[in-house]
Length: 365
Image (cartoon, rainbow, N blue to C red; front, top):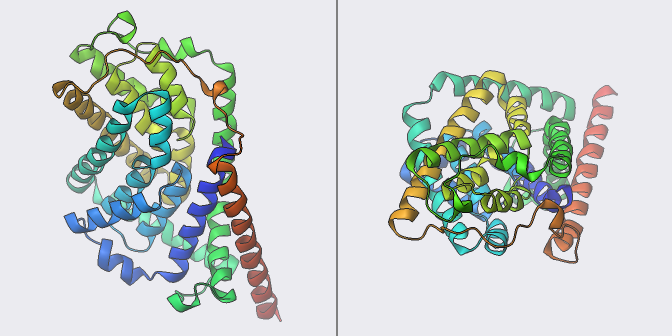
């Protein structure tokens, strides 16, 4: 899993560092400061254009929020960059079929719409003000420890000074959440290796016949709720949850339950720990709760919509591929992207650390 998401993490933290170094708070606030339809669409488009794994997406979303984006727009970016993803669509097509690819993209748009309603009208504003204060305090501490300066002009993007500034912000973000990411990957890999598939499948009510018929209302609701719960306790990342979803689908979980499970990579325990590092405990728990509610509601909407239109598959795929059967290491696009972006992030980290050490030495002198 670490190999599969490495390039996404490297690219995501690099983009986040560049935004912090070169995009001013005023510019973000001007375009994304209010939860208007235009701002929501703009944030969603930027998220789609910078598709990445859940951890990197959370870092970029945090940066937008820290710079002045409304929480609704920052979350739209988060959802778009993790669900409107071509890579995930390809894996879904291979393991689960085209209906799930369509559900992922339709559901991604519905996720953003449902989230906008819940966070805009029902979420306590004071909680997110507390989250912003927590970010500002953490940012001030990072500036002191790493010598961060103000926003740089875009013309400095590819200069030594600009690359070093990006590297300083990148290293700060990684130091903040790196341990949580490693912990999440270790636990996810361990659970994938030692927990039998039947244990996960046993948690779902089924319609009978191994998914051969559409389930009733209560089965659909139970599956849509339990799907994210399994994702939360299994710690599976956005790469690993597709093969695991195919196992659950073959075991009798409803179509909506699979969709809810796939969405839930943003509310796993490691992700909640990342939100806690960014926003503080109370805002992190409230935020994760609203994300979870959004996922359950959206999964039920997708399930109902696809049933009404006759698009919902009624028979699970024959292949029952699990995590252990996926080719994680191969000469594919993942390998080449890792070869490009891991060294790039390493060089930026080195430049940022070196510049910070020089600055600290001069101030000490």
